[in-house]
Image (cartoon, rainbow, N blue to C red; front, side):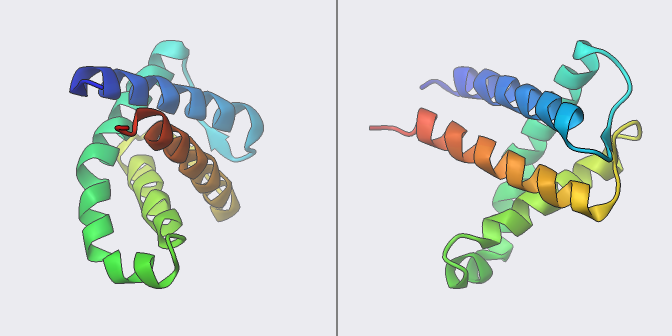
Length: 118
């Protein structure tokens, strides 16, 4: 799959994930409309493209020792950084961050399985 198509797919999946999180996770709030959600999804996609590989490299031994469960920590840090960067996004309390981390980990898994080269 071409790079641009992968990025657009990631933005769409992250938009869907944000919508699900806003709808079903208490403590996850973002005022605005669908344009706000898509713009935040774009920021999340950029963080996934830039920050996630760096964190995966740094936490590589932890990820290997936990048989991949360390990626939950990486996804949680990415969401935490997103919460810091985007002033209107609120993820409070910490349990909401845990639920959102699980949700976006599943979404990232689906994305990677769907775009994996065969």
